[in-house]
Length: 369
Figure 1 (cartoon, rainbow, N blue to C red):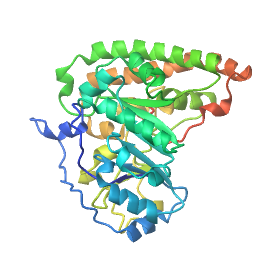
Figure 2 (figure 1 turned 135 degrees about the vertical axis):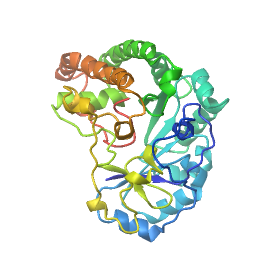
Figure 3 (figure 1 turned 180 degrees about the vertical axis):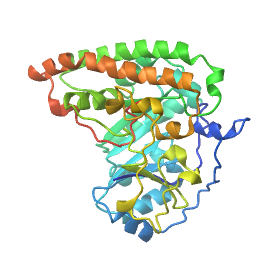
Figure 4 (figure 1 turned 180 degrees about the horizontal axis):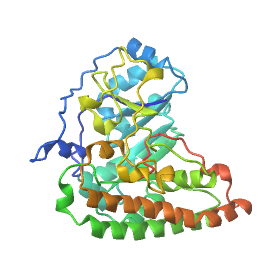
């Protein structure tokens, strides 16, 4: 089982697309939202007991910015054994976490949106430079785990942004994923031309898949571009999926107050709480499956999984705009399906191997952007 463990509800950045803005819309948010502070209102023994009812657990430290509560991260890592640790961070404070803790992480997801100009425009001046510097430091200090670039795509060119992260000389990534800033907060669809963006985005996805396959041929590897590798894995194995992030069925969020929500973006939405770790049993947590009506008859559901639980429940965008978002998902899946035979040929000729498409499900990487 996977758990997002919230260590802090505050952040040291003010990203222009942060989902927090959803709760500040002038027309109001359609659900009641509980205010959450940073005080951890449960004990380590209670956390251990909660986790102890299931096996092969993974904790992903999350926020806000999780590294604003380094002491609690250290406390958990010192006291919870036989567990896999991950973290999703903006990376600004990675140099503050002692290397003996950093080096215990299996995976670190760090937020970068592309090149220096794009990242700094979205996240603040100097962010890109500081994050890259910190990533170089943790590698120098012995971190051997996976580092995944976690991108938010709002307006930028997907092809050029991903390509920069893969090929830049300062810190080239081999793992990346991205999430469109689409259908997450209310009324913002009125403030942009998403139809125009989606057309450009789809063209960029096609180019990026071509690059991905070309890199397989040239370098005998499969870059971990999660929206590609995970879907292609299931195409090759003829495997259907549930909601790919795991929210509400395999991946739950433990808030600072101990309440359990289905996913991090639903923190504070008390109507959807699934209990509290002081009393809840991990092996009996309620499983939530919520699809749009259009999902139920969609030919791509088995590979998409429904995209987003939060969006499916709250419907931030109207039907016509949601259809455009689904159009980008269908384009992604159809383009990968069209390239299945090329990839099978590369496997047959041993340029790559079938196991190169293996990945850890529910590790926080958005598969369906």
